[in-house]
Image (cartoon, rainbow, N blue to C red; front, side, top):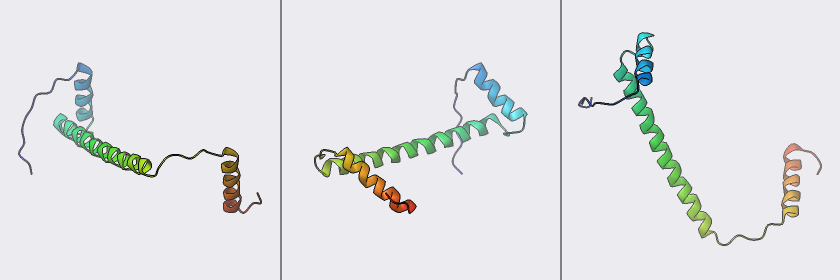
Length: 93
């Protein structure tokens, strides 16, 4: 296990009350346990966000590398979508 270090954190009265309520109801053993869990969740979300940003950058670069956009024929696109839907559902277009 890692070395435990104590730090001081300033919280509002409402936040402290929420922490103490969670301990008093038995949801958590200590307020420190709540803070550690919150920190783990924050770290996980931060890592996930970084991964998502990296993936978006990859997709952006792939899109730029694919060349200029071509004009879109909306009527043709709709007709192709209808044909795909009909084929997928077994219905006649």
